[in-house]
Length: 158
Image (cartoon, rainbow, N blue to C red; front, side, top):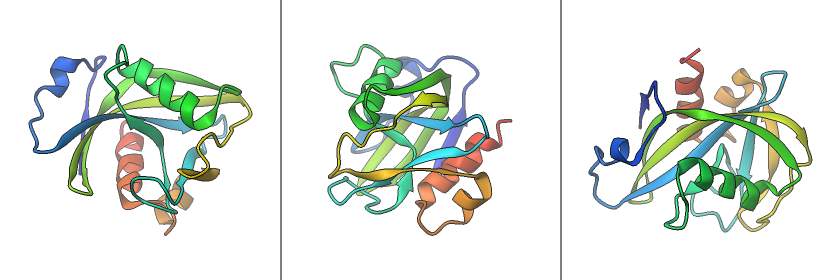
């Protein structure tokens, strides 16, 4: 696992630097509420990995996505519905992790939960959502190790 901080908006040319076998590109949003608690999603039985564990919201970039931010907006809508209001920042960095024989390259965004109802749009892939404070997330056996790594990396940017 590696996190690469970027001080500019991440573009496809930044991703082309990574040349791993069986590589896929994804987006992740690290969401906090006004109290500084981190919103994580509990992965369901039909999720591709980390079943039963909590992780940040995100998913694979698809060919139809115009850019990384539009991919993220699509993922939020698909996973959390349209009733939630999240303010999205620009990209923070790139996160590389290896899961299930896939080299994932994730573009990481920061989000602030403003209001609204968080819906479970894919009940087979998501069991629910929970806000964690930093220590609770880092010390929980229910938060995936890759998510803990990413939380620490993002928090170190401040």
